[in-house]
Image 1 (cartoon, helix red, strand yellow):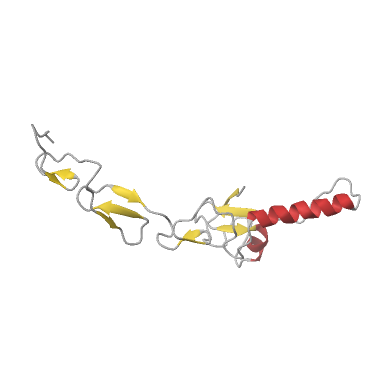
Image 2 (cartoon, rainbow, N blue to C red):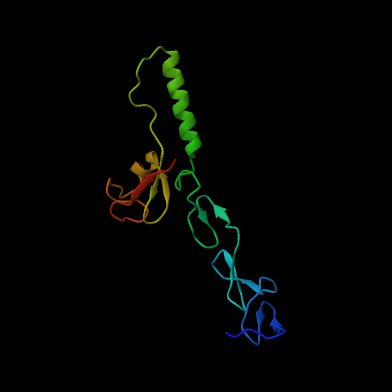
Length: 147
């Protein structure tokens, strides 16, 4: 698109003569089912805050990788860590030497659907096997341990 010689004729954020855009004057409108707004003149997007309910946004359905709670029972990673710390403190107080095992637990995130389950709930969910995610039933669905 060509540049205007002296003056632009701005329609909000876009020049009607040459098509150049500027950072001001956008007409942002929320996009239904998404967590962003889009300018009706030039198409620029502006990110909005997600509305988290547990690990999932109620608006767009995106899963939050920063959330550290089980999608089934709501138990947090912090609760698992606290439980483990208390267990090992009790064992030490009782004079136990090397402790193999413990309260067990942690969070697993599915690589396919993004849902998070604690290790206890994962074993209780119908259809769970070592190779299948209990939420989306994809093979080898369990991904990284959430830290």
